[in-house]
Image (cartoon, rainbow, N blue to C red):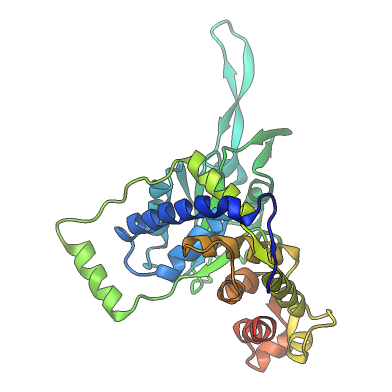
Length: 337
């Protein structure tokens, strides 16, 4: 029998809380569906990233409702949302804020800090790869520490604080690859694909008619933070824990558990944040589906979103046609059976 490990509370004490949370999250998904047609997996993964207390990177071609999804989630989750359109000329101060010199009525002069858009609960970084590395790095401290340093002074960000960034994978002109350190700050990389035929038919009628659905708030920021705390209390089975560790470690080319395709094809593998992402997002995905504890299926479903942006193929593997998705699929099969 698979034993459970709970961080703070015995499973029996949180069953009722999880049941109530599942009902609330079902209401959240219904409200999101008023604006977003289909894309169930994308919505689920984005919610899992937020419920885990992390950030999400939405990757997809233009016109797939990435921006609309972020705006809708901000409304439904009751969060103060701000949007920054990343461009090559965007400067760190445009995100963080800056100090300006003010002159008082008595002639005295003093510096006053003007907050940038990062001082919000949900920051939408639109087309994040269009900004220079210097500007992208301005988000590193905010994403990891939930605070920023401006003019030598540390300033706390509102809580909760989440970044949902969008990235266009097909336009390379005027774009800068995200640094590995920043990619690692994103809990999940979420690929947004084209809708199915039936979904696109629904989109046509939903967006070109005289009436369009309006999403309503379901949660407050405080209630969202309570759900995030509940996620961390959820039990995790030993089999799931071992599968996560086995999966992450087997994707590192220098680990003794690495197979030949990993050792020869992967330039660098995922660090400990990948295991943390799988553990937290697995709990969140379970709760989104009305379950108390994550399963091996959750680990398998989250493997690519949690791992692919934390790995890189070597030149030889690329030349031979290998893909990160194929390597991760093999590692999942070995770790999760």
